[in-house]
Length: 119
Length: 113
Image (cartoon, rainbow over all chains, first blue to last red; front, side, top):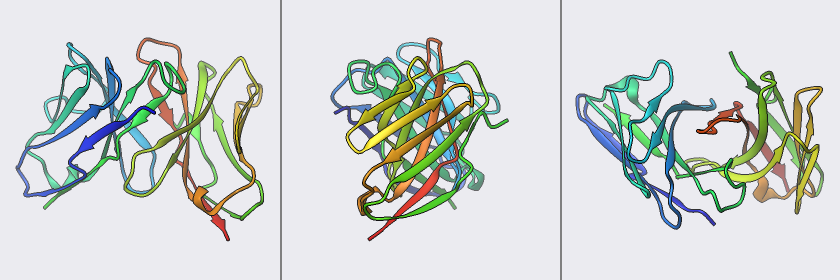
């Protein structure tokens, strides 16, 4: 099945640091990837849609200068949290669509997420 | 404005019995629905989906039912197994190039041995 790898799984860093999270589709190509944020006991909130070769589309209320997204290839999207602060601490999850897989055009396949803790 | 709602935050079921997880939505433009299962510290795993042109889709122990008039869908798991214990999210999508998903808040299912 479609596998999405997300790295790192957990990162702890000081306030003011920039943190890069990678999302890779391992056995399929993904022209579109998605970045979510999840707060404890809450739903997944879409932050942005990452499009290969073009600018990401951000959801309302998400600062694009704060959360930089780059989708340089069909298998890799990165999310960089710039000048991270404690309020940015959260669980970040990426997903990608495998157009040929189960669920087809609609289903997204998720990475295992990144737990970000800013001290 | 919560367009996809899962009103039961938790559900406990005895092993071997049926688990029924419910989901309601408000946006009549949703035309595709999905269920995901999530273990702690992992990403959601796709389970089963249904198009709005259908009212039922079955895959092994999992069946999803869609009632468009009531804007309601449900996931049935029969028989329930302890390994099914997880958080279940329903998600909905509208037609459009991005096909973004809108998620409910999840239901924690606990299957008791």
